[in-house]
Image (cartoon, rainbow, N blue to C red; front, side, top):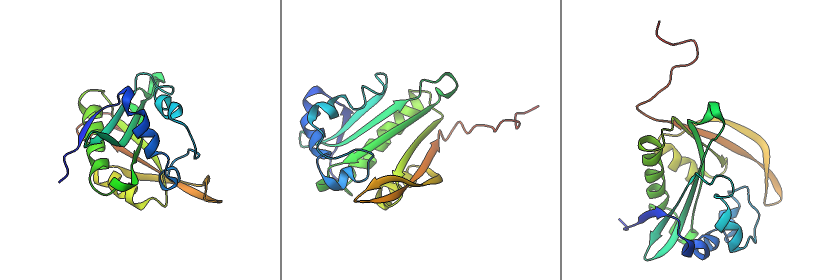
Length: 176
């Protein structure tokens, strides 16, 4: 198994992160467009949630995976977060995504008081859907024709995972 280090993003990671998102096969599975510069990726998650979590997976001194988690700030949804994850194409399928997911869920379950972590993923991205499933995420639905990629409209799958030790009661099911 490859020795990965998962850590917070550092200012010096911006070029490696921009390199990950420079590949069309990476961008195709996101809501982004090609040709974003390093400054865009430096501020991508921080501009959306200054309190969020941004991690990289480092291998041989280089950031080869990137994960950003946005913590919901709405008063009645503070127990919910969403995230995005990308891995450099040369390192996909080698455990970098697993390492990032493991640390993100450790933070969610043990430090951030999150009950629900949710995501959207291109419905054609079977590798990512399988990774999320191995980490306890389940499909909750699909939005049809909401993404435009490669000159065609495509679908998005919605997935979520609940904190395993904190499964909530549905409204109306409270103990009497």
